Amino acid sequence: MVSEKMYELGTKKSTIRTIFEFGRQRAAELGEDSVFDFSLGNPNVPAPAFVKQAILDVLEDMTPTEIHGYTVAPGAPAVRETLARSLNERFGTGFSGRNLFLTAGAAAAITITFKALAEPGDEFLALAPFFPEYRCFVESVRAALTVVPPRVEDFQIDFAALEQRLTSRTKAVIVNSPNNPSGVVYSEATIRALTDLLRQKQKEYGHPVFLISDEPYREIAYAGVEVPWLTKYYENTIVCYSYSKSVSLPGERIGYILVPDEVADFDRVYGAIAGAARVLTHVNAPSLFQWVVARCAGLPSEVAAYEKNGRLLYEGLLAAGFQCVKPQGAFYLFPRSLEADDYAFCERAKKYGLLLVPGTDFGCPGHFRAAYCIRTETIERSLPLFRKLAAEYRG
Image 1 (cartoon, rainbow, N blue to C red):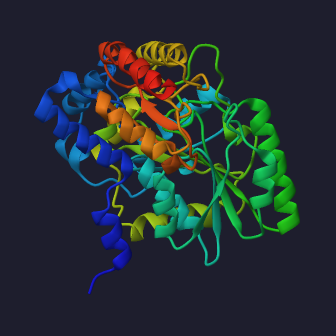
Image 2: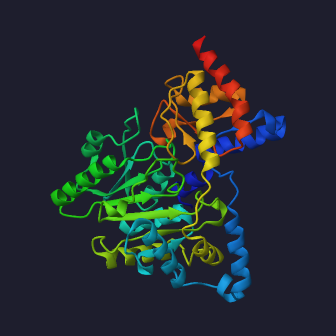
Image 3: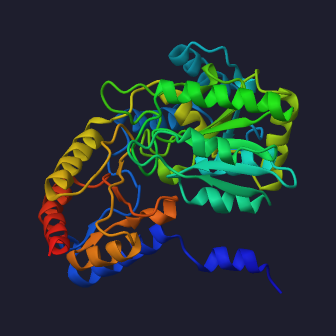
């Protein structure tokens, strides 16, 4: 009568959403001050003032048809040219509007890219820890997701594990840096080793192995941390970007796919992206926010509040006895749980009002994710509760 797979996806919420909804229920019952919700990566830093000004300027300067009417499917040409120029100024590249396809955020960009590339029998490799929705995005295009286990001491890539899982069926490797959930940035040495390995495998297999770079946190990197721009290291890189985190616009759903000219068989890849977008019901990215992000191109993200929160939570958890890799960007910590069963650990944390996400969902058992894009005062009040939780495990 209906697709069982779609029914399953529609009725079984993600663990993150389930915990978030539990938190809303508990807050209604006990009061907001009794709940310390680290579950959802929903930016608490307001959109910068220049975003509001850009919205007002667009509404003032453009006609209603320009603002609210259809654009061509890849996005308004003038917007794409503006974004391409901004990328070129920042990264020393040579893009033009033809390299960009605007989407309703990074989730749409990633799913469209998977759909465009996937053929029967293909595999996509995710480097743990990874965003859990990759699995349903990949499976929705009838491909398989293969998980590469993590190198937990620093969450850089475990190359021995990666090479074991690369096969002639590998269509692409997905990278996410700064990473959700670990907050780690892949170093230039890691990226060079990764791209050298993929070039070797391309020759061995006789077909391209794409690198899909999922980049919603690119601008949220902390002082002194360099986020490598991957198209400069590897010709078959496709970038999926979102403005959700960088300028706090998660609900507006605006982002893009970047396909460099150097990608193997560019015309066919870009054409497949357009076709995949079409069958996935994309008409055009939200037109108002196409014009808004064009006016905001190259303007800085507000990172200081996230860096402050990350340092506060990281140092507080270390003092309580947790083990954790220091965050370099994004707005997540990914400490080791205090027992091997991370689900049981997160369940026990609930009695202190601490809402945490089990690491198993990110392909990394024995850890938990804490999103610190929340009020600093909430983090400060949570630290005694983390200490009580840790003391309980010490007996």
